[in-house]
Each structure stands twice: as C-alpha cells, then as structure tokens.
Amino acid sequence: MKKIFLTLAFSISVVSIAQEITTNDALRYAIDNMNGTARFRSMGGAFGAVGGDLSAININPAGSLFFNNNFASVSVSNFNNCNESNYFGKMNKESYSTLDLNQIGAVFVFDENSGKSGWNKISFAVNYENTKNLDNRLFVSGYNPYNSISQYFVDQANFVTNTPFNDYQYEMAYETYIINPSTADPNVFVSNVSPGGNYYQDFFTTANGYNGKLTANIATSYKNKLFLGLNLNAHFTDFVTTSRLYEYNDNPENPSSQPTVREIVFDNQLSSYGSGFSFNLGAIYKVDESLRLGVAYESPTWLRLKEELVQDLYTYGNVNVPAGDQNRYYEGPIFIFPAYKLKTPGRVTASATYIFGKKGLISIDVASKDYSKTEYKNSYQNNFRDINSQLSNELTTAYEVRIGGEYKIKQWSIRGGYRFEESPYKYNAVIGDLTSYSTGIGYNFGESRLDLSYANTRRDYNQNLISSGMTDTARIKNIQDNITLTYAINF
Image (cartoon, rainbow, N blue to C red; front, side, top):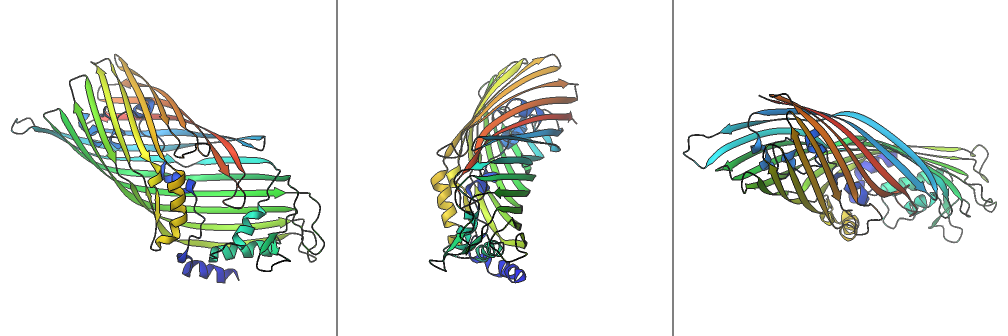
C-alpha cells in the first residue's frame, strides 16, 4: 500500500498543494537576517549612503565606488540562537550555536583621470554572504486543556479536496487507531483520543540550513558627485528541519466499541532546497564632503523550490484494539513534491550619512517592504489561491530603521548600531517587532584591517505545534547573539 501512495505522490500530487504550505514558510525566505562583515554588523547595517564595505553593496550597489583601492574581505561568525518558550504556562529554554564562514568578496576599482569624461570612476565587485542562518533548536512542552493533536489527522481525513498526501495522512492515522469512521456517518472521520482535555504535549525541532546570496556588482560615478550602481544576485537555499511531536492523556476510555489512544508520537523531516534571482539598483549623491544621500531599490526575489518529506507515526497503550495492537507503528515513504515558485517582496531604502572629517560618521537608513506581495506560483495557479489570499490578507508593509555610528582614534575605530524592524503581520501578535543593538571595534594596520562586532537581536513569535487542526500556539522569545570577525586587505 505504501508503494502505491509513493507512486501517487509522484504522479498526481501536481494537482494540488500537498505540503500544507503556511505563511511562516514564506517568511523563512522573505525575512533576512542582518549578516555581513563585522563593520557592517557593528553599525546596525546602516550603510545605504556610507559605502566602502562589501556588505554595504547589498543595501546600495553604488557603495562599491567608495573604495580607494582594490579591496577584499573575509568574515567568520559565531551565531547563537536561543528560544524561550511558554506553552500554557510551562517555560522551556533551548540554545544552539554555530560557527560559519559568513562572507567573502572583493572589489576592483578603476579611475579615469584623463579629464575627457565626467564619468571618472568605475568599480566591479563579487561578494558572497549567508543572508540568513537557519540553524535552530526549539523545545516546547505543557498541558493543553483543550485540543489533541489527533485533530490534525481528522482534518486531513475529512479534507474536502482530497490529494494523495491527505489520503496518506488518513492511512497513517487509521492504521495506528488515531481515527475511525463516525458511527453516525461512515464518510466522516472522528478522533479516537478520548475527550476531556489536559493533554500533555511536547514538541522538539531542530533545523539546519542557510539562505545565501552571490552578488555581481558594477558601479560608476559622475564628477565624483553622483554614484550609480547595479547588482545581479543569485540566491541559494538549503534547509532541513526535523521535529518530534508527542502527546499523552489519561482521560476515561472511550466506549468499548471504539478504540482509545493514549500516546502519540509524530515524526517529520522536511528538506527544502532551491535557487533564485534578484537585482538591486542604487544611487548616492554627495551633497558636499560631509553629507551624502542615498536611495536604493531591491527587486523581488524569484525562487524555485523543491521539498522532500518523511513522516513516521507511533501510538502506544491503545485500548479496545485487537491483541498485539496496543502499540502501533507506521513508517512513511519519502514524498518528493513538485517544484514550485515563490516571489518574495522587494524593498526600497532611503539613506543619509554625515561624515565628521576624519573623525567618524553617523548614518541612518529607512526601508520599507510590503510582505503582502509575497506570492506562490506553479503551473496550476489555483493551487496556491488560498495561501496567496492568506498572505495578502494577513501580511502588510513593514518599515525598518537602521542607525549606525563610527568614531576613529588613530588606528582604532569604535562603532555602534541600532536596528528596528516592524512585524510583517498586520497584527504583530503572530510575529512581533524586531529590535537589535550592536557594537564593535576595528584596527587599521595600513594596508589591512581587522574588525570585530557583537550584535544582539530579539523578536517574539507564536509557534504552532502542528500545521492544522488545532490553533493553540506556544509563545517564543527568540534571542540571537552574533560575533563576527572580518579581515580586510587593500591590494
């Protein structure tokens, strides 16, 4: 039977959304972390009119013109992700740390000093960055007084427009006694988990992966006053998440004619991978030697994604079942879903920088991003009608403010930054606003430079234990600490 469902998953699942894609799945790609070089991170990413840093070209591609020489940098980051969960009053904490090569790139600068043209400078750059670290650990536990996770399988079995995936979820649950046909209507399925509430539930998930971007940049300046730039970006994503959802109850047994399920263990492993494209346009105008103004546009990112899913389902301590079926196990096949497309929203950034001679600078960026423009597509457009409508109705335009400063003392540089980003949701109870503080130091050796930064970022969000059937969520306080070290050299 499992082989039949595997074949159907290949041949028929193109006619509908099998994966139960959610709004938060889209935001995994639409929301970027503020990664990059140590100097960039320490100043909160407020580089839209500053330039002179390889990560700055991700904000405004005209920034590559503010290098005086050919330049290269490489950055490594220690990323710590801490999640504090609250589920019906039960608190838990889980942390995870990784060390990654976060950025590497180079820029080549050419000056035109003949005076024959006002276009006096051109630059070319290539830069790679991890735009988002997806490594994560989360543990949630508590007593749910209302809902059992069995309602997920009831929803799947009673799904109006059945697909091979819905049918497979039904088969898993039926074979492990979680659901049965209703005695009133054999076409409607009901839960065999006894009612009464007080279900102990815990959820543990691990995630590993990244969103990366390779940028090719070209920029030119006119009379050293107007600076224009263009980026062409190739995007990459590779993400694996593994989760285990457990439930136990000791409520009174169901009537003797109906099985009773005491314990459920539901394992999932989802692999997502793909690639995409975007571009950036940017301009910086030097009002005088102290003041610069910038404006930049980042296009939507067009991604093509593929997913694979493996599921296992266990039940223990079953009552009113045939002898030997007190414990049941269903091992699922590998579902390889048809590729689909995702368009994440573009961004507009306005920037201003004031430079205090050779002593330092202060900079501010203000950006906006309309998350309601996020959209799924494939060959069967109606397949994504519901999720696209949900994205349009639930998400909104979010504004971001980045402020950064730098002060120089001989060869030393002291830096600080602040970043605030609104929730992408109209009602930010789902995902809250983001607040980040950063600081850093740098030392200039003459032809090379060493920079160190620390950034602390906080955001709260709601976490579903399962994608449908129960609306109860855990409240998560997410705290990210990032230490980045960058070595840069003129050549």
